[in-house]
Image 1 (cartoon, one colour):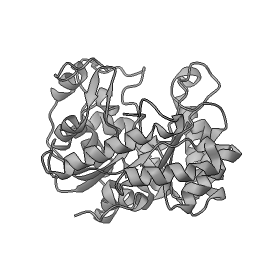
Image 2 (tube, helix red, strand yellow; image 1 turned 30 degrees about the vertical axis):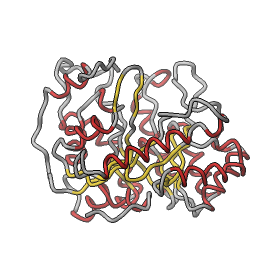
Image 3 (cartoon, one colour; image 1 turned 120 degrees about the vertical axis):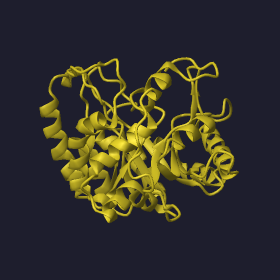
Length: 341
């Protein structure tokens, strides 16, 4: 992202050139996955989020997703992520003041705790619960890993999700009534199924449609990836304690032959995402599927307004009750949030 000097980034300016009529503007939405940060000179905090939330959609509440933001600079390494939880509590208080719109932004959150600590995570989780003022709902483990050096791994090593100490810690998360968000790649999806079997009462939220790898060694193999991904998604969906987030997908692949000087509109975005998201919705059902913005990461490729219009286009044929689940109900249930109003 470009440096922020108090003005919008080039990405923001480019995307803002495309304005659309908001589809179904009254439909209540909970955005279950966004970040806030100051990173590489780019600022995305409550004022920037509030601007996006005011783009015309009826966003009633949001869920903050951990992103290693605002960690404490000192103290024990395992306690530094408490800084992020403290920061989010402050951002939620700013939102609750009413000075940034009507959305309950950062209404709840999931954070980062070192799950390799095993049972010792309990005291840390208790500290996060206290630091959040009641908004801490769970933990995310980012374990995406592939042996090919072309892949940008988000996990520390292969098989992290299956390690005994990690599973011991996940057992504590389960016992404390918290949820677990999982971010890994499509080649690892069977690990989620195994985890769900080992912890059948634990609410597991699979991030980003299972993150199919479409670059590196899989470049040009989209059909093969889709087939392998779909088979694994169907296996994971058989575990009824697993939810799936629908978002964070590429819009324009290397083979795209359209005009790249124009920002993508919601029709284009919906066409790119539809096969993946419809597969997930059919497998998990609307009651365990939730659309996510993944902002500001997604902001590099489309605007907030366009993103939610695209989701609404994908769900054009859904019933009112199905839309209520996809856009708010599943998220509220997974993260134990106040009913949509």
